[in-house]
Length: 369
Image (cartoon, rainbow, N blue to C red; front, side, top):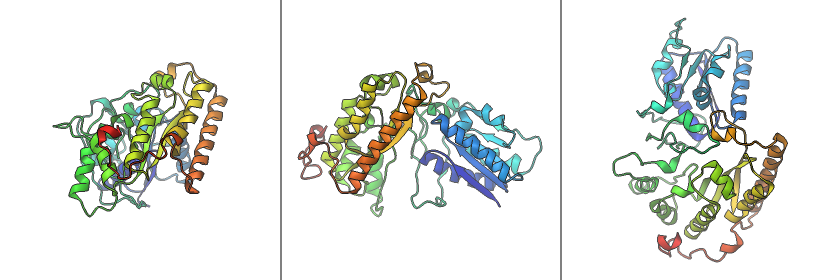
Protein backbone atom coordinates (compact mmCIF):
# COMPACT_ATOMS: atom_id res chain seq x y z
CA UNK A 1 0.00 0.00 0.00
CA UNK A 2 1.21 3.55 -0.72
CA UNK A 3 -1.12 6.42 0.17
CA UNK A 4 -4.86 6.00 0.77
CA UNK A 5 -7.18 8.95 1.34
CA UNK A 6 -10.52 9.33 3.13
CA UNK A 7 -12.48 12.54 2.59
CA UNK A 8 -15.31 14.07 4.61
CA UNK A 9 -17.32 17.11 3.62
CA UNK A 10 -17.46 19.34 0.59
CA UNK A 11 -16.19 19.42 -3.00
CA UNK A 12 -13.37 21.70 -1.91
CA UNK A 13 -12.17 19.01 0.48
CA UNK A 14 -12.40 16.48 -2.35
CA UNK A 15 -10.17 18.63 -4.52
CA UNK A 16 -7.70 19.29 -1.73
CA UNK A 17 -7.48 15.59 -0.90
CA UNK A 18 -6.03 15.04 -4.37
CA UNK A 19 -3.50 17.81 -3.71
CA UNK A 20 -2.60 16.27 -0.34
CA UNK A 21 -2.02 12.88 -1.94
CA UNK A 22 0.37 14.47 -4.43
CA UNK A 23 2.23 16.51 -1.80
CA UNK A 24 2.61 13.52 0.52
CA UNK A 25 3.98 11.41 -2.34
CA UNK A 26 6.47 14.16 -3.19
CA UNK A 27 7.64 14.03 0.42
CA UNK A 28 8.28 10.31 0.22
CA UNK A 29 5.40 9.29 2.48
CA UNK A 30 4.25 5.70 1.99
CA UNK A 31 2.03 3.16 3.72
CA UNK A 32 -0.17 5.94 5.02
CA UNK A 33 -3.84 6.91 5.31
CA UNK A 34 -4.69 10.61 4.98
CA UNK A 35 -8.02 11.59 6.54
CA UNK A 36 -9.34 14.97 5.40
CA UNK A 37 -11.94 16.08 7.94
CA UNK A 38 -15.00 18.35 7.98
CA UNK A 39 -16.07 20.61 10.84
CA UNK A 40 -19.49 21.78 9.68
CA UNK A 41 -21.33 19.67 12.30
CA UNK A 42 -20.46 17.85 15.49
CA UNK A 43 -21.57 14.65 13.74
CA UNK A 44 -18.97 15.19 11.02
CA UNK A 45 -16.25 15.44 13.68
CA UNK A 46 -17.55 12.33 15.45
CA UNK A 47 -17.49 10.36 12.20
CA UNK A 48 -13.90 11.44 11.55
CA UNK A 49 -12.77 10.26 14.99
CA UNK A 50 -14.64 6.98 14.52
CA UNK A 51 -12.91 6.48 11.16
CA UNK A 52 -9.49 7.16 12.70
CA UNK A 53 -10.05 4.53 15.39
CA UNK A 54 -11.36 1.98 12.90
CA UNK A 55 -8.44 2.60 10.56
CA UNK A 56 -5.94 2.01 13.36
CA UNK A 57 -7.68 -1.21 14.45
CA UNK A 58 -7.76 -2.58 10.91
CA UNK A 59 -4.30 -1.35 9.88
CA UNK A 60 -2.04 -1.16 12.90
CA UNK A 61 1.11 -0.52 10.87
CA UNK A 62 0.06 2.41 8.67
CA UNK A 63 0.81 6.06 9.38
CA UNK A 64 -2.35 8.13 9.96
CA UNK A 65 -2.39 11.78 8.92
CA UNK A 66 -5.38 13.91 9.96
CA UNK A 67 -6.11 17.26 8.34
CA UNK A 68 -8.98 19.47 7.14
CA UNK A 69 -11.35 21.84 8.88
CA UNK A 70 -11.90 19.78 12.04
CA UNK A 71 -8.15 19.36 12.45
CA UNK A 72 -7.84 23.14 12.11
CA UNK A 73 -10.59 24.05 14.59
CA UNK A 74 -10.11 21.17 17.04
CA UNK A 75 -6.42 20.29 16.71
CA UNK A 76 -6.18 19.35 20.40
CA UNK A 77 -8.96 16.78 19.94
CA UNK A 78 -7.02 14.90 17.28
CA UNK A 79 -3.64 15.46 18.91
CA UNK A 80 -5.00 13.63 21.97
CA UNK A 81 -5.79 10.54 19.89
CA UNK A 82 -2.94 8.05 20.16
CA UNK A 83 -3.94 6.58 16.81
CA UNK A 84 -2.84 9.74 14.97
CA UNK A 85 0.72 10.21 13.71
CA UNK A 86 0.39 13.71 12.24
CA UNK A 87 -2.15 16.57 12.52
CA UNK A 88 -2.03 19.23 9.78
CA UNK A 89 -3.94 22.51 9.47
CA UNK A 90 -5.63 23.67 6.29
CA UNK A 91 -2.60 25.66 5.16
CA UNK A 92 0.02 23.07 6.10
CA UNK A 93 -1.74 20.14 4.44
CA UNK A 94 -1.09 21.60 0.97
CA UNK A 95 2.69 21.70 1.37
CA UNK A 96 5.03 18.76 0.82
CA UNK A 97 7.28 20.01 3.64
CA UNK A 98 4.61 19.14 6.22
CA UNK A 99 4.75 15.44 5.28
CA UNK A 100 8.50 15.15 4.81
CA UNK A 101 9.53 14.33 8.43
CA UNK A 102 6.97 11.53 8.57
CA UNK A 103 8.05 10.35 5.14
CA UNK A 104 11.67 10.28 6.25
CA UNK A 105 10.61 8.51 9.46
CA UNK A 106 12.17 11.14 11.70
CA UNK A 107 11.26 10.02 15.21
CA UNK A 108 10.98 13.45 16.84
CA UNK A 109 9.02 15.20 14.06
CA UNK A 110 6.57 17.94 14.95
CA UNK A 111 3.34 15.94 15.36
CA UNK A 112 0.92 18.89 15.26
CA UNK A 113 1.36 21.55 12.57
CA UNK A 114 -1.60 23.93 12.74
CA UNK A 115 -1.00 27.63 12.21
CA UNK A 116 -3.38 30.56 12.80
CA UNK A 117 -5.67 30.29 9.78
CA UNK A 118 -6.75 33.92 10.16
CA UNK A 119 -3.19 35.00 9.45
CA UNK A 120 -2.92 33.06 6.18
CA UNK A 121 -2.86 35.39 3.17
CA UNK A 122 -0.85 33.52 0.55
CA UNK A 123 -2.73 31.31 -1.85
CA UNK A 124 -1.48 27.91 -2.93
CA UNK A 125 -1.11 27.04 -6.58
CA UNK A 126 -2.47 23.54 -6.59
CA UNK A 127 -4.06 22.70 -9.90
CA UNK A 128 -4.33 18.94 -10.31
CA UNK A 129 -4.05 16.81 -13.42
CA UNK A 130 -7.13 14.75 -12.54
CA UNK A 131 -9.55 13.70 -9.85
CA UNK A 132 -9.03 10.07 -8.86
CA UNK A 133 -12.32 8.19 -8.82
CA UNK A 134 -14.42 11.17 -9.99
CA UNK A 135 -16.05 11.82 -13.34
CA UNK A 136 -16.22 15.59 -12.69
CA UNK A 137 -13.23 17.78 -12.10
CA UNK A 138 -13.37 20.59 -9.54
CA UNK A 139 -11.60 23.92 -10.03
CA UNK A 140 -11.15 25.98 -6.89
CA UNK A 141 -11.67 29.72 -7.41
CA UNK A 142 -12.10 30.85 -3.83
CA UNK A 143 -11.28 29.85 -0.25
CA UNK A 144 -12.23 31.08 3.19
CA UNK A 145 -15.18 33.18 4.34
CA UNK A 146 -15.41 36.71 5.75
CA UNK A 147 -18.99 36.30 6.97
CA UNK A 148 -19.81 35.31 10.53
CA UNK A 149 -23.08 33.38 10.51
CA UNK A 150 -23.80 32.61 14.14
CA UNK A 151 -24.08 28.82 13.64
CA UNK A 152 -21.00 28.33 11.49
CA UNK A 153 -17.49 27.22 12.50
CA UNK A 154 -16.12 27.13 8.94
CA UNK A 155 -14.43 30.61 8.89
CA UNK A 156 -12.29 29.40 11.79
CA UNK A 157 -11.29 26.36 9.76
CA UNK A 158 -10.80 28.06 6.40
CA UNK A 159 -9.78 31.55 7.39
CA UNK A 160 -10.69 34.82 5.64
CA UNK A 161 -11.85 34.91 2.03
CA UNK A 162 -8.96 34.74 -0.41
CA UNK A 163 -8.53 33.88 -4.05
CA UNK A 164 -7.24 30.52 -5.21
CA UNK A 165 -7.97 28.75 -8.42
CA UNK A 166 -15.37 25.17 -5.85
CA UNK A 167 -15.03 27.63 -2.86
CA UNK A 168 -16.36 28.07 0.65
CA UNK A 169 -18.23 31.29 -0.17
CA UNK A 170 -18.22 31.20 -3.97
CA UNK A 171 -20.00 34.47 -4.62
CA UNK A 172 -17.28 36.30 -2.66
CA UNK A 173 -14.90 35.62 -5.55
CA UNK A 174 -13.00 38.70 -6.71
CA UNK A 175 -13.70 40.98 -3.77
CA UNK A 176 -9.99 41.30 -3.01
CA UNK A 177 -8.70 41.38 -6.59
CA UNK A 178 -7.82 44.52 -8.59
CA UNK A 179 -10.97 45.84 -10.23
CA UNK A 180 -13.10 43.65 -7.95
CA UNK A 181 -14.28 41.16 -10.62
CA UNK A 182 -17.32 39.10 -9.70
CA UNK A 183 -18.16 35.43 -9.95
CA UNK A 184 -20.38 36.35 -12.88
CA UNK A 185 -17.51 37.95 -14.81
CA UNK A 186 -15.36 34.90 -14.12
CA UNK A 187 -18.08 32.55 -15.39
CA UNK A 188 -18.72 34.71 -18.46
CA UNK A 189 -15.00 34.87 -19.24
CA UNK A 190 -14.59 31.09 -18.98
CA UNK A 191 -17.60 30.49 -21.24
CA UNK A 192 -16.32 33.02 -23.78
CA UNK A 193 -12.67 31.99 -23.86
CA UNK A 194 -13.23 28.22 -23.72
CA UNK A 195 -15.89 27.64 -26.40
CA UNK A 196 -15.10 23.92 -26.49
CA UNK A 197 -16.15 23.54 -22.83
CA UNK A 198 -19.43 21.56 -23.03
CA UNK A 199 -20.67 22.16 -19.48
CA UNK A 200 -19.88 24.42 -16.54
CA UNK A 201 -21.30 23.85 -13.08
CA UNK A 202 -21.30 25.96 -9.93
CA UNK A 203 -21.30 24.65 -6.40
CA UNK A 204 -23.28 26.27 -3.56
CA UNK A 205 -23.98 29.98 -4.03
CA UNK A 206 -25.21 32.75 -1.75
CA UNK A 207 -28.23 34.24 -3.54
CA UNK A 208 -27.89 37.72 -2.06
CA UNK A 209 -24.48 38.16 -3.71
CA UNK A 210 -25.35 36.91 -7.19
CA UNK A 211 -24.46 39.66 -9.67
CA UNK A 212 -26.02 40.70 -12.98
CA UNK A 213 -23.23 39.12 -15.01
CA UNK A 214 -23.97 35.73 -13.50
CA UNK A 215 -27.70 36.16 -14.09
CA UNK A 216 -26.97 37.07 -17.67
CA UNK A 217 -24.84 33.96 -18.11
CA UNK A 218 -27.60 31.82 -16.62
CA UNK A 219 -30.04 33.19 -19.17
CA UNK A 220 -27.81 33.30 -22.23
CA UNK A 221 -25.52 30.27 -22.17
CA UNK A 222 -26.97 26.79 -21.94
CA UNK A 223 -23.52 25.38 -21.12
CA UNK A 224 -23.92 26.81 -17.63
CA UNK A 225 -25.83 23.93 -16.08
CA UNK A 226 -29.33 24.86 -14.83
CA UNK A 227 -28.86 23.41 -11.35
CA UNK A 228 -28.00 25.70 -8.46
CA UNK A 229 -27.59 24.81 -4.81
CA UNK A 230 -28.58 27.77 -2.65
CA UNK A 231 -27.22 28.65 0.77
CA UNK A 232 -30.62 29.53 2.30
CA UNK A 233 -30.36 27.90 5.78
CA UNK A 234 -33.87 28.86 6.95
CA UNK A 235 -37.24 30.20 5.91
CA UNK A 236 -38.06 32.51 8.81
CA UNK A 237 -36.87 36.12 8.90
CA UNK A 238 -36.24 36.28 12.64
CA UNK A 239 -34.19 33.08 12.61
CA UNK A 240 -32.26 34.35 9.58
CA UNK A 241 -31.50 37.50 11.53
CA UNK A 242 -30.31 35.47 14.53
CA UNK A 243 -28.20 33.42 12.15
CA UNK A 244 -26.72 36.71 10.94
CA UNK A 245 -27.57 35.86 7.37
CA UNK A 246 -27.64 38.71 4.87
CA UNK A 247 -30.86 37.75 3.10
CA UNK A 248 -34.50 37.50 4.12
CA UNK A 249 -37.23 35.07 3.16
CA UNK A 250 -38.53 37.37 0.42
CA UNK A 251 -35.03 37.64 -1.08
CA UNK A 252 -34.84 33.86 -1.48
CA UNK A 253 -38.24 33.65 -3.14
CA UNK A 254 -37.42 36.60 -5.40
CA UNK A 255 -34.20 34.98 -6.52
CA UNK A 256 -35.96 31.70 -7.36
CA UNK A 257 -38.56 33.60 -9.42
CA UNK A 258 -35.87 35.63 -11.15
CA UNK A 259 -33.80 32.62 -12.17
CA UNK A 260 -36.87 30.77 -13.46
CA UNK A 261 -37.79 33.70 -15.67
CA UNK A 262 -34.29 33.57 -17.15
CA UNK A 263 -34.00 29.77 -17.29
CA UNK A 264 -37.34 27.94 -17.14
CA UNK A 265 -35.62 24.54 -16.93
CA UNK A 266 -33.69 25.44 -13.76
CA UNK A 267 -33.59 23.04 -10.81
CA UNK A 268 -32.91 24.46 -7.35
CA UNK A 269 -31.57 22.81 -4.21
CA UNK A 270 -30.76 24.33 -0.84
CA UNK A 271 -29.15 23.91 2.56
CA UNK A 272 -31.68 24.21 5.40
CA UNK A 273 -30.97 23.92 9.13
CA UNK A 274 -33.60 22.33 11.38
CA UNK A 275 -33.86 23.17 15.06
CA UNK A 276 -31.81 26.36 15.24
CA UNK A 277 -31.85 27.88 18.75
CA UNK A 278 -35.15 29.67 19.60
CA UNK A 279 -36.89 28.12 16.55
CA UNK A 280 -40.62 27.84 17.29
CA UNK A 281 -43.01 25.52 15.49
CA UNK A 282 -44.32 28.46 13.43
CA UNK A 283 -40.76 29.43 12.47
CA UNK A 284 -40.03 25.87 11.41
CA UNK A 285 -43.23 25.81 9.34
CA UNK A 286 -41.82 28.78 7.42
CA UNK A 287 -38.85 26.63 6.43
CA UNK A 288 -41.18 23.88 5.28
CA UNK A 289 -43.22 26.40 3.28
CA UNK A 290 -40.05 27.83 1.71
CA UNK A 291 -39.52 24.52 -0.11
CA UNK A 292 -42.74 25.11 -2.04
CA UNK A 293 -42.38 28.87 -2.30
CA UNK A 294 -38.97 28.54 -3.95
CA UNK A 295 -39.73 25.30 -5.79
CA UNK A 296 -36.80 23.44 -4.23
CA UNK A 297 -36.19 19.88 -5.42
CA UNK A 298 -32.99 18.89 -3.59
CA UNK A 299 -32.67 19.56 0.13
CA UNK A 300 -29.50 19.23 2.17
CA UNK A 301 -30.92 19.14 5.70
CA UNK A 302 -28.72 19.84 8.72
CA UNK A 303 -30.04 19.07 12.22
CA UNK A 304 -28.61 21.96 14.24
CA UNK A 305 -25.63 21.05 16.40
CA UNK A 306 -23.86 23.70 18.49
CA UNK A 307 -20.28 24.28 17.41
CA UNK A 308 -18.06 25.52 20.26
CA UNK A 309 -16.76 28.99 19.53
CA UNK A 310 -19.83 30.17 17.58
CA UNK A 311 -22.45 32.63 18.92
CA UNK A 312 -25.29 30.17 18.25
CA UNK A 313 -23.76 27.73 20.73
CA UNK A 314 -24.52 30.27 23.48
CA UNK A 315 -28.16 30.77 22.45
CA UNK A 316 -31.09 28.91 24.09
CA UNK A 317 -31.00 25.41 22.62
CA UNK A 318 -33.87 23.18 21.54
CA UNK A 319 -34.07 19.64 22.86
CA UNK A 320 -32.50 16.93 20.74
CA UNK A 321 -35.76 15.11 20.02
CA UNK A 322 -37.40 18.23 18.62
CA UNK A 323 -34.40 18.91 16.38
CA UNK A 324 -34.35 15.30 15.16
CA UNK A 325 -38.11 15.30 14.46
CA UNK A 326 -38.00 18.58 12.54
CA UNK A 327 -35.03 17.42 10.46
CA UNK A 328 -36.96 14.26 9.61
CA UNK A 329 -39.98 16.32 8.51
CA UNK A 330 -37.78 18.47 6.29
CA UNK A 331 -36.19 15.40 4.73
CA UNK A 332 -39.64 13.91 4.08
CA UNK A 333 -40.62 17.15 2.38
CA UNK A 334 -37.48 17.05 0.30
CA UNK A 335 -38.05 13.44 -0.71
CA UNK A 336 -41.60 14.28 -1.78
CA UNK A 337 -40.57 17.25 -3.92
CA UNK A 338 -37.73 15.29 -5.50
CA UNK A 339 -40.09 12.41 -6.31
CA UNK A 340 -42.54 14.85 -7.91
CA UNK A 341 -39.70 16.32 -9.98
CA UNK A 342 -38.46 12.92 -11.13
CA UNK A 343 -42.03 11.91 -12.02
CA UNK A 344 -42.22 14.90 -14.34
CA UNK A 345 -44.49 17.03 -12.21
CA UNK A 346 -43.93 20.78 -12.07
CA UNK A 347 -42.35 22.33 -9.00
CA UNK A 348 -42.65 25.89 -10.22
CA UNK A 349 -44.58 27.73 -7.50
CA UNK A 350 -48.17 28.44 -8.49
CA UNK A 351 -47.76 32.21 -8.13
CA UNK A 352 -45.16 32.38 -10.90
CA UNK A 353 -46.53 29.75 -13.32
CA UNK A 354 -47.11 31.42 -16.69
CA UNK A 355 -44.65 34.23 -15.99
CA UNK A 356 -41.55 32.57 -17.42
CA UNK A 357 -40.10 34.50 -20.34
CA UNK A 358 -40.64 33.09 -23.81
CA UNK A 359 -37.06 34.07 -24.58
CA UNK A 360 -34.41 33.45 -21.97
CA UNK A 361 -33.59 37.16 -21.80
CA UNK A 362 -36.82 38.57 -23.19
CA UNK A 363 -36.89 41.07 -20.34
CA UNK A 364 -34.00 43.27 -19.24
CA UNK A 365 -32.15 42.14 -16.13
CA UNK A 366 -33.34 45.21 -14.27
CA UNK A 367 -36.92 44.11 -14.83
CA UNK A 368 -36.12 40.47 -14.05
CA UNK A 369 -34.77 41.64 -10.70
